[in-house]
Length: 531
Image (cartoon, rainbow, N blue to C red; front, side, top):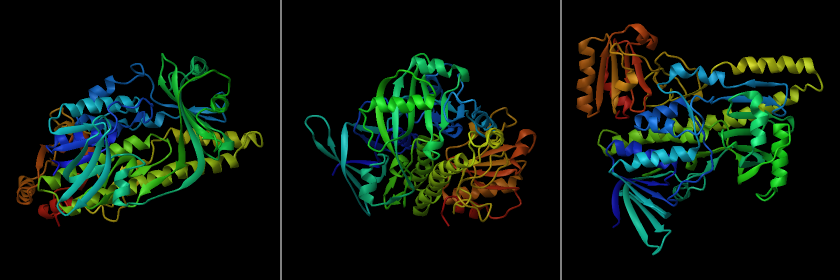
């Protein structure tokens, strides 16, 4: 019998380590098995959303994340979109809409390479005594029965010993080639767009100088008509070092050594010649893949093990971190005796539709829509038509994104009825069941986010004592952790639109009402899947 843990995490990348922190802070005994002791230095996953920074706040390392950024203090996070190449007369700032999301989140977004995020999370995990790391170990087997899981691994270093870790549950955070997913047999499906995408990391002072026309922007996206809607994309990594990454479609037989051809593609996208010192050349498959289920018995998958896509829009790492927050509290609830098997099933129920729509509607659908637009509008054929259509794109880019993750259709959300979980929605301050809680200031001057509990939180604004007492009594009977925030229904709190809110441990709303609703026990039982 091997070492015993409550949860064994397979894969110690940013998603796996973040899950360890989420569980470790909740008192769960965790093991993490990871092949690489050192983090990789490819600067992918740079754009961290407002929501991801909320995660880091609750993981007690948001200041460390911000201090780790490579960009100079105050440097612009947004970028530009240009037609054909970066020297085109047709380009616009696409970062304004992102700034309009600030009121809806407790933290602002950030930008730094994924490897720095990973280093911060590893350092945070090292501070939590109930997290054990097995560095330089490769997982070979994942087995389960009604009593638990057994994870077999082999050391990558002499004397190459085999180990077995036993747990109540296992979570595979081991990437697109997940051995965990292979072992549990969850098939992956999605749209294959049939292109080969190059990803390069390089330094180029001449490119830095050429992009001075855009000011302190960090991303540069080109819509070249010949690429069928696929992007050519430069991203800034370091300013003083003139370091960038680039991804774009290339010929299917392109090899890492074909740097002359790759540089020519980069120069085409930039619109001028420049020299580049390559630090990395790799490739992506231009495909969307989503696992059929994120759970098989006692084994779960998260992050790239559950879903993958081309490097578009920063959805990979951010989606993985949201997987972590959704799964983490549910696993802890089950292990601590106040969650059910049905609650664990809601992880797939809530998270799979989100990435299915992200991949198919937002990424693949966006590429198809751009391809159609580029076929319909060509300045060399009809300049007036093109400029009118381009003006509409510029105008639309100033509006906040309708990408709004929500679990409105979840079985553990009380209202509104008839919803559908996914990403199609609207950012509003109004409290809605299944949607993210907007930050508002309490009369104490504290933000509601600073007052939330680690379990369920009841926000009661001018709510009668007997109504609050019903919830407290029901929570005690159901053995649910419940913190109550009492305050007046006034000032900015009126923006909630409802004076009685039940907030889940992941800061999504299970319920919003006015206090006249009966059945506190039923509301709480539904929110915890205890019905």
